Length: 434
Image 1: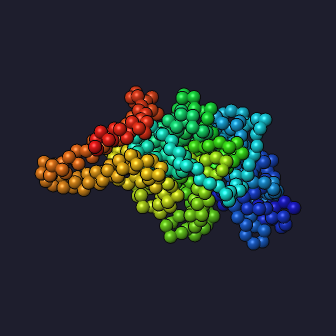
Image 2: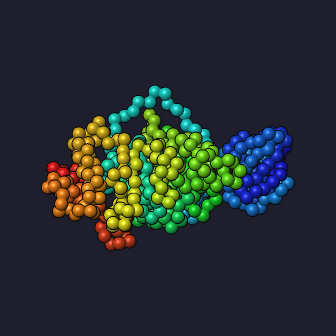
Image 3: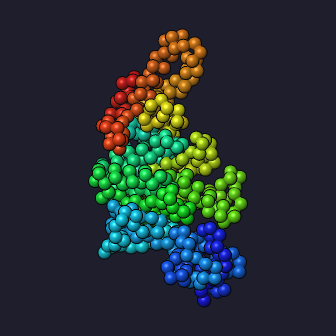
């Protein structure tokens, strides 16, 4: 027996099933002649299914019949998806034909992969990004997570695009890019950049930008992750996973929580924020089949790094790059706050003794520079001791040394971009510090 719609509130459609109640995360089909699909969010006693209107379809009326499909959202998988842009449902957004191919498969995006019990961690493998400040302070290690934190307009997307450009050009595996609630313009620019540099042949893209409803924005990261798992587990590929922006995922979940009348947690966010983020992050991991190395931008509301959502996402990262508005205002690009940027991977076992000892010296100089700035503002630099003046001058040279031009900005400003090997970066720092 089909169900029947009993109420409609914005994107929430309540459906009563007298028997054969659908499962959570199952798609149900409306009998409205348009094939409208709803996604079951949760169930309540009495056979009531709370469903989400995925496509914001307004051809819905109270009393309409609803039937089960016995399946969830399934996205296309395989080589045919490379070079394509898709939405949360796997539909193409690039104006091309539907994704087809002889080896095409489909996967329920909510189905978690099997966990390995005897997976041994391989020796750390460092990937060079060509960006001095990242290669030195937050080494890009295969299979780990890097978070790029910053407020609006400080360069998170530019850093991400530069990483995609530099790493994909080196031929290191397959790249995934997931646009979660960001500007449509940025999506077009990324598409153009990848096409112009002939990088689409190794990139799969999923987009649910600002124009999409919160259902698709909340699902897009899960859809992209499910597709990345297929390349890792079934095709045994190493995947570079870029997500812009993880905070927008939480915002989308918040919007859904509000229209579902859920009581927020103490921080004002949805009640299941921690489990939602944790589940998604756990899927972006490595196993015996391959690796998923992820770079995730994290928007900081009102430049407040202490925001609970920002803090929680940051705890899931191995490295955190903090982009600062104060640094950006000084004309430094990338606008990295060197004192707040941290990495648990900056150890002798991973980067070697040379790199590690240099990082200790550099961090010491930068911290001393911050403490001396207040003194200089009062008494002037000439009143410092010779040793303090020397350290202050070294720190200023280091800050200037970490500034570089981005390749992806060349078409905008006409200035050629820079690429530095890790050895070149270390040599340039040794010339200043030693």
